[in-house]
Length: 107
Ligand SMILES: [Zn+2]
Image (cartoon, rainbow, N blue to C red; front, side, top):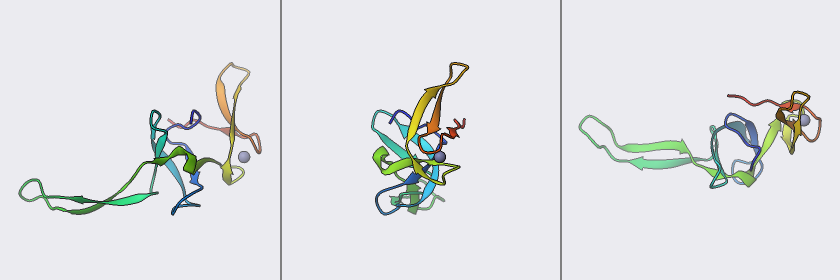
């Protein structure tokens, strides 16, 4: 779980959305769950709360377990495992275990 950060590019490796990739919108560290942009849509029924507001069905991304996603390496173009290494400057950075490419942290 520790290596996933918001805005990371991931690929879904299990479930109905297997093979889809997207950006991590949210990481629920305590629950081991993540929300991936445009993946795992669920329909939610809403009721009109005030006059002029429409009830209906909205679709939203639902959280999924972190074991269903892998980091997407831009170079490998596939789901990869990550290794964390200290750089020469003493910063802890994440690297693709397969090709060694830096997995940048996007803020
Ligand atoms: Zn790679």
